[in-house]
Image (cartoon, rainbow, N blue to C red; front, side, top):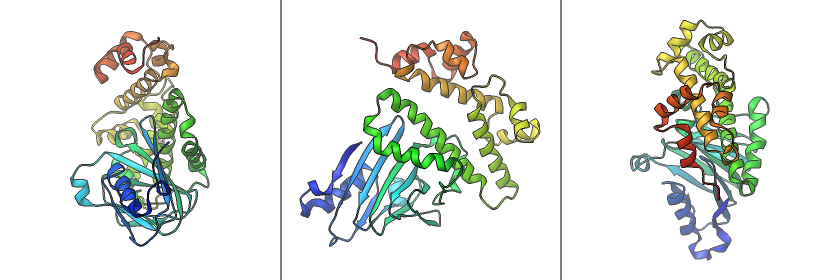
Amino acid sequence: MGVLIRAQDVPPQQRHAAWRSIVCDTLGPLDCRIDPDSPLRGEIDAGALGSVGVGRVRTTTPHSVHRTPGQIRQGSRELYRVVLALSGEPVLEQDGRSTRLTPGRLALYDFARPYQLAYTSAVDLAVFSLPRDELTLPHDSVARLTAVPITTDDGTGALAAPLLRRVTLDLESYRPASAARLSGVVMDLLTTVIAERAEQTAALPDESRARTLQLRVNAFIEEHLDDPGLDPATVAAAHHVSVRQLHRLFETRGTTVAAWIRHRRLERCRRELADPALRHVPVSLIAARWGLPGSAHFSRLFRQAYGMPPAEYRRARLPQDP
């Protein structure tokens, strides 16, 4: 990761202004509130893992960061952010909920809605910025989990926390091909973590059951995209519902089960076509291993989805061999 600011490198009389500039402008727009008489110590680093933004904040100076309605009206990036407490106990507030994170715990917030992240003592945080359209979960279900603590003691959370910590510490050492693959791993893992957390929520009226089922179905589809036999009947059987019930679930999203499976398979293919490490793997093989055999059929589907044939897409995304 690159250092955005290291407080000790800035003259003391300029530190507050420089820190605010980085937080409010580079990472925002945000509002940063610090006692002007408090000595400012800390460092902010930032980098990218494919489409996933990775940031790290270390500070011993109590202060808070706010996203206000006025700032949102100025324009908002369509992001979810996941914060991991490496040390310290930051407090996240959004949508009327508040959670104090302990080391190793995760929480989610929506950058497009007001929130507050407060540091009352020394903290070391990792923050992952996820494009909303790449988190393959219903947005209304995700909205119910903002500022809700996500345990990392068991389940997928126990896998996610150490991986995210390692990614934060080692980001600079990854080669571009490794970073591209890890980006997909991080997105898939966090999607599953959030889906599991949604399933654990207590209230289960009909609407909540439908949302939970949708999360489970999405996670199941992601895990089985490479299975040529994946179809609506398979998905329905795995979740003990009828095919008709499953189709009704997807109708509320304006799509069908088959169309969603096809979309996610194409996205996996698109990701691998842009991976430098896989540049010599034939397009047909990439398509086949994600359940889309038949070169002509795949090429037609890919062109419809992305506006160009898969081979042309690959050439446009990858640097040419010398």
